[in-house]
Image (cartoon, rainbow, N blue to C red; front, side, top):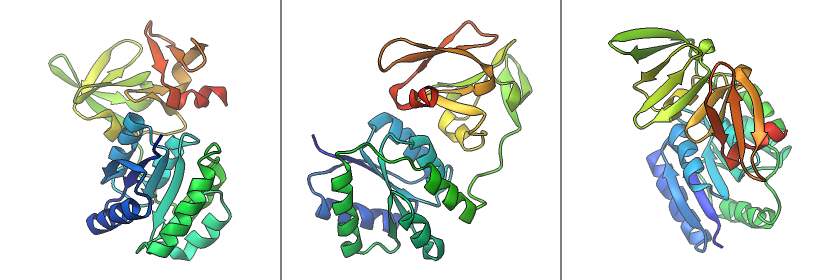
Length: 249
């Protein structure tokens, strides 16, 4: 089976250069998506489930670090960065590779050689590395949402984010479910993610983000499937395979 690769890079010239270099250096691999920002990268990751992800650290929407946090141990990650003042020390102390901009063919070849050796083993835990990088880049995370304007019937309602039980994708809208009501917001779920507190709101499915404090229980349906029960709601929320580790850990 061919190795599936996702590229996320917001600079057009760098994006095209990296794609061409990868196709030349690793022709048997399959590039399943080239994303222009962090939100599309994460959405594409859930859709294509690639084996390897090349992530620019600074991107619009979700940063590369935030996408890597969500990926966790589900894929091998290679970071692409222009920040050589901290990158070498931080990455050399971790278990993941990196490429400095502008990417050089020789450096990419070495990174791919190491990557091929790692593919037979599970992806490493990026937790410690991401903590080091976050400390070096304190302004990576955008300001968190506190209120959401939502349509309820003919009214526009201002909803406190902390009161939301879960968010669920509904075509071009997002369904916002509270204990006593629900509403729709005219924004895609992937675009809401960057403004939510990642410690309080967990994505458990491509189309579902749940308030951890609202989780009543988690039921294992089989080896790969789980289901979440939420306080104050009769609905059961499926947990996709990419997110079952949240509850196992």
